[in-house]
Length: 418
View 1 (cartoon, rainbow, N blue to C red):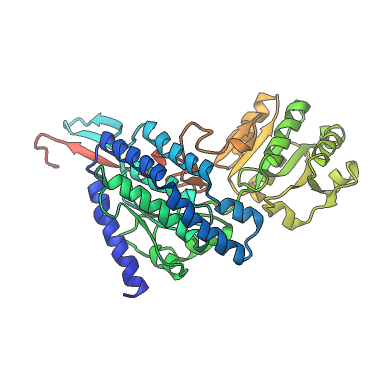
View 2: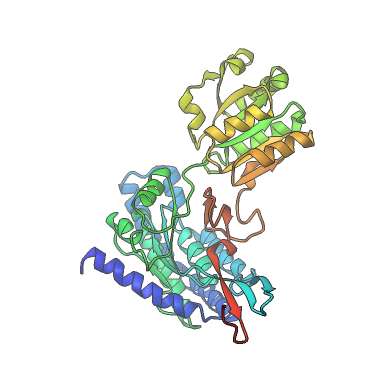
């Protein structure tokens, strides 16, 4: 069987599974999810054994320490996966929700109802816990899922999916509701995202290279974010202590994630006082600062920032700094150089904050809070499938509701159109 035929067979099976999933009640889905959680617990030895093979292969291939850490599955992380599945059980099922209802003058009753998308392909790198997160989120929303993880986690991904499918089938999980692509051939990704009419949506999770490769080859809708070039703007009205705390948290807590800030813009009226304080605080955290000419004239230890720096997602303890004349200049800078992910303003002036939130074109915009909160769990949405910087269908953290679409159901009493 050719690779095309193999992926086609999986896609057809997923379509059939999506039809069966659409019939499941919220109660039945929760029962199946509980069975999945139980089986993950029961099969933890098998999962750790499979992960040990991946870890051994990763070390032999020269994977870096951070990548090996992302790949590792120990008891604590397996407990986290199980907890994540049970957290989804506790969330309200959005499928079947009546979004709105109205009656036309001719008596037609029109309902706008939330429904599953159908078949979703999740294409991801490294972290095997994405297998569990993606599978349960898609299942809870009645979507069949095709999972294509990175080759470095192939054994771990399969062991996790096998456990979830085995547990789920005990309580009525439809066949092929969760499928894992078994080949490491990168051509499989192109085949999946060209399954027009079978696969309804692709969600890539990983580096910019993977996401661009998926998008460029796709014939189906793709929800994505290429990178997180996130900003903090410190207004002339800002509370300095608050601004320093927010910047340190947003840059230093986890610099290698997409919602960490990469740039700080400071109102030129306060730059002389604020920048030395910020530089001293961040120096203690070993943050390298790069600045424009005005900022470097105040803090001479800053390296000069290039044009490329303003677009760069460092994912490291590096921060680029610029002095700006007003909030309008900050907004223009963010909309030009940013990635439409997460940006924040620190300001006591409510009118300035309002201008910022209304005009910054990003998925999440913060006033006096760290960008590190851009996360489904932190937003109270439970687990998330990823962050979207697109504008159509879903934007920002994607939880259960964002994995559904809607249709119109119309009830009549024999009306015909004249």
